[in-house]
Length: 253
Image 1 (cartoon, rainbow, N blue to C red):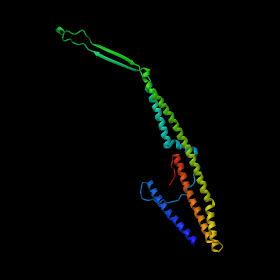
Image 2: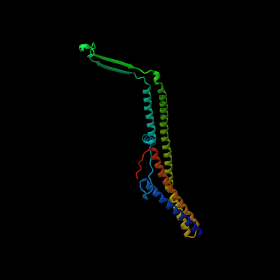
Image 3: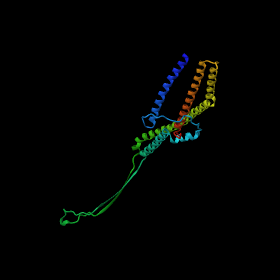
Image 4: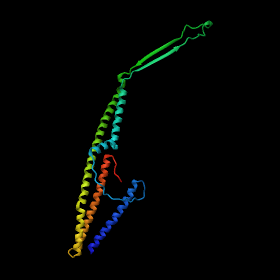
């Protein structure tokens, strides 16, 4: 009887702890929908297993993940800077054309206001300027720097795409393991644990067992149930991890 009371008090303490965990989880869930009021979710975590196409997920991730897009944007910027650096060192001749007109004038200093011997004239001029090659030498360092930046950007794109493939494959491996674990519990462990408890209780009522045996069988059922619930939670987390790694969201809530 004392052992039974100890077990009951222990489980009561676990219950109080679990109730507190539920309240904290409800408050944390409310933050995702933009409110401070606790939200009590309904339904359960029995999500049907899904089959993913690895190649399709990788292609989706490379096309939509922000880190990959950022790396590609940096590469495009580096390419644009190379074009600008090339234009800075290119020898660009400049052609100039001009036209001017001079009219005849009256020389007021001459006697009788005679017309000065200047006549109306039109002038057309043309010039071409070519920068000397050494005048652009300072821009060659800029070009070499932008080329090096482009090489670095290309490597960053390659690393980002490789990281996508690794993360997706790791997430899928974890997800498949979570599916197998859930199937293991649903395939007979839960039922067998209940059967053991039922038979132990039956023997106890017939005087062929002890209360400690009943408690042990009940503890086994509780442990199996908790492990099963944790397997469901891990399965949900693994599914979300796959979606995050692929940069998609198609989970129906």
